[in-house]
Every structure is written in C-alpha cells, then in structure tokens.
Image (cartoon, rainbow, N blue to C red; front, side, top):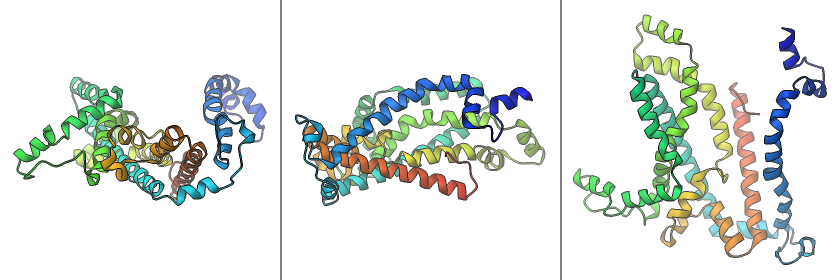
Length: 317
C-alpha cells in the first residue's frame, strides 16, 4: 500500500515531489519528449514566414512583412477552397471506412474458434500495411482500369453494360481512395480492437450463454460495449488528424493517383502546400496553408474531446 502511494503520489504533495517519486518513469519518457520537442515544436519558429514575403536567399528578418496578406490570398482562391473540401471529404470517408472495417474484422476474428485459422487471417490482413503506397496504388490502378479485374467482374455479373472509367472521373475518386486505404489498413487497425476484446471478462459471455443469448446478442451486448472506451479514444485521435498530414489518405493516394483530369477532386491541403511551397517557391503562402491545417486539427481535437466529456465518455485530454 505504501509502495503504491509512493508511485502514484498523494494529492497536494506537489508536482516536483511526485516527479521525484516517479523519477524512473520520468527518465523513460525523456527520449520521446526530446523527440517531440525537436521534430514537432522546434520547427514552429518557421511559422513566422507565413507573415512575410519570404525568399530563402534573403536573411530571415530582412524579408518584407505582409501581415495576413498570405491568408487572404489563400481564401480568395477557388483552388484552396476545393483543396479544403477534398481533404475533409476523403478524411471523413477514410475515417468511416477504416473504423467500421477494423471493428468488423476484429469482431469476426474474435468469434473464430480455430486459433490456426485466426492467426492465418490476421497475418494475411496485416500484410498490406507493410506495403509501400507506391505498390498499393499500382495494384489499385491495375485493378480499377477499364480493362481491369473490377470492371471485368462487374461486366460478367451484368451490373454494368460498359467499363467504368474509375481512374479518370472525379465522382469516383474519393470513394476509390477510401476503398484503397481501407484495404491497406483494415487488418492493422483491428489489432487494438482485438486487444481490447481480449480484456473482456469471459464470465460475461458464459452468463449470457446460460441466459440463452446467441452469438449475435453476445456481440451486441457484451463485445461492442466492452470496446466502447477504446473506440471513443481512437475516434477522438482520428478526428484530430482529419486534416493532418499523418493521415495517409490526405497525401499519398491523392498524390500518386491524382492527374489533371482529377485535380478538382484529388488536390488536398498537403498537395497544395507541396505545389506552392516546393514547386513554385511561394513559401509564405504554403506556410499559411500549413498553419490553417494545424489550427483546424487542434480545434477538431479539442471539440471531439469536449463532446466526449459532455457525454460522460472516456477522454483523451
């Protein structure tokens, strides 16, 4: 009991005292803290270029200040507004597809009795996560081409009369990107849900079975409620990353599959930043777009966390 109190710290003892009592844990966190400070916070000084007409060849503070002119320029361009629309649309589709597929796959695997079959399916579904996006997009382009396997199957089933131009029509792009992302990440995303399901007390299933509950009822009333806290935490994190560059669907797929025919549907904020920042050298405007993306991510994260708290659900912050 005394050892537990020493590790956790008593209320009112002060931050420094608690930190000293937990010094081993604090030291373990130092490398990750340094990593975050070095790669996530230290580069923030570069945000100052969003308020300048920045040129790399000129010393930083010799560049002319333009105030909020770069931000005004962004929101006066239809191209940037379309990039915002595309980013949110693809991110929401990815979020829904990935969450539903991960939970569905985890539930199905959790119900499998044969360990050998379960491990085989897990291995097969995990493998696409380790493939390069270049390889995945190449496979998808072959599959969804006009003479690809998808069109051939649809034609043979009589669902379409002529091949569909999946890769060249904007109305298909968002959904195609969502399907590709789901295929690649469903197995990997299901890992944490499977771990959460393994922590559910088996006695609950036994009691439900004694009461006459079938497999579907046990899933609905035991398995899914048992992973609710995990689902809420992951949902908060994913909502915070809707427009973030850490969401692969916001860059890799649109960048590799996008073309001039699809520019109004495929260009996201990240690609907009790359285009104007690297290709055209308009660093101030590209930085302004990046700041906007970061502020939206912070707003979404805190909003989702606040809503979860109001609903008395587990929160991240």
